[in-house]
Structures are given as structure tokens and as C-alpha cells.
Image (tube, rainbow, N blue to C red; front, side, top):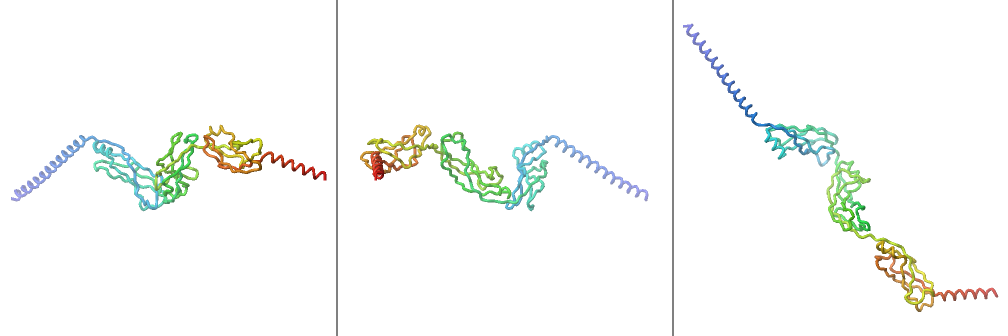
Length: 336
């Protein structure tokens, strides 16, 4: 009986071991089959690599600081299925950012974080860290100055008036840059040989005292500017010349105050004029007379420096009589 019982126990143990071994074998075969199928499936999907350039944004205390000398983009290397990589390149939903919150003024090296990457893709930023300088933020109000290249204005023309709808702007940025700004220029882009009035939206740029551009942020980037152009006038000083409308010039001594006037007009017109004639009525003048005469503007002359002059007319007979009287008086005095 003991031998029979012992035999049954041995058979049970043997059967249990065989069952365990058989289960392990089946499980390993199943895992191998799944692994093979998975690898076969993966091998059927082509993979692709690509590099995408994405904008780099910064998180920082923009009320107190500005960023100096930081990169604006980073490269992102992606790898995965061809379809997903192509979609990532076309839609470019990937974004890169660097967190500087809680950091103060100075230079900092921070990690680049990626977002918007499909979970089935592998991706890494290049570079994975960036060096950024935080500078103390400053701001100031600066005057706007209209400026243009006057060599592009046609010969014979000049700007007689200039207006801008923006007279001042606020510049902000690193304190050293803001302190360097002398003015903000409204730069008007002129065509060569400009003759007519100009009206355009001029770009605003901050400049230092030497006229070099300064990198700052402006509260406005453009100003509406108008330039008024007029044909420039030449000028010439000429002598006044008496001209008798009646009577004889030879019978009078004539003087003008002022004796010259300045005439304005085109250079061609002025070149043809050497004196300015003044018409005088010399009839019935028997003694020294002073008159105020209105000058006539010659044809082609746009303007005169003086509209009226004073003229003194002295009959020569009066001068002769005065001289003779003086001579007689002198002779009488000598004989006495």
C-alpha cells in the first residue's frame, strides 16, 4: 500500500511539472510570435528624419527686463514615420521656448523646451541650451525729426515746409541703449529728381548723436510725413537807374535811398537784368525835392526786396546858383 501511494504522489508531481513546462513553452512561443509580428509590422512603415527651424520664445519678466542678443529660432531634429515627419514639416506645430522667469539681470544659460511634438515622433532641439542676457529695462520720450536725402531733390527746387503727424515717441530697451538715443528720425524715401510734393508713411528709427541707428523698441514704427516742394528762387542785387517820363535827366542830380534793391526770380531772368529802371516825372521841379517812389517789378521777377524807395531830385541850376552866390560872397569878403 505504501508503494502504491508513493507512486501516485510521484505521478501527480510529475504531471504538475509537465504542465508547468508545457505552459511556459506555449507562452514563449506566443511572445515570440507577437514579437515577430510586431517587428514585421514596424519594418513595413518607412522612417524619416528631418530638421525643422522653429521660432524661439522666452518667458521672462518683461515689465522690468529686456532680452539682449538672443537667438530668435532653433533647429529641431525629428524622426519617425515618413507621414508624421512630413506633417510636422508642413504644419510646423512645434514650438520652442526658454524659461527665464525668476532670473535677474545678467547672462543666463537655460534649456530649450519643445511643445507640439507628436507622441509618435522623437525630437530634440539644436542647440538644447541657449545663452541669454537680461538687461534692466528703461524708457524715454524722444522727439521725431523728419529727414531725407536732399541730393535727390531736383535742381532748382527746395523743401519749404515739412510736417509729421507724430512729434514724439517712447523708446524702450536696455538702459544704455535708451540713454544713447538722441532723436527718432522719420526717414522719407525720395525718388531721384523729386519736384512735386511728397506724402508718405515714413519709417521711424532711433539714432544717436552721431546719426548711428540704436537698437531699441519704439511705441510707433511709422509717421505720416508731408514735404512741400517749391521751385527755388535766385537773387541778385541791382542798382536803381533814373528814367525820365517827362523832363530831362541832364538838368537834375538824382539820388536814391536805398541805392540798390535785391530782385528774386529764375536765374535766367536775373542774368538779363543789370539795373532796375525808376520812372520819374521831372516836370515843374524847380527846387530840391524828395519823393517816395513805388518800384515797378520787371517781367519775370517774382519779388523785390523793397517796394518803395526815396528819391531826391535837385535841379542843377539851383546848384549853379548856390555855387555862384558862394563865390560872390567870398569875393566881397576879400575886397573888404
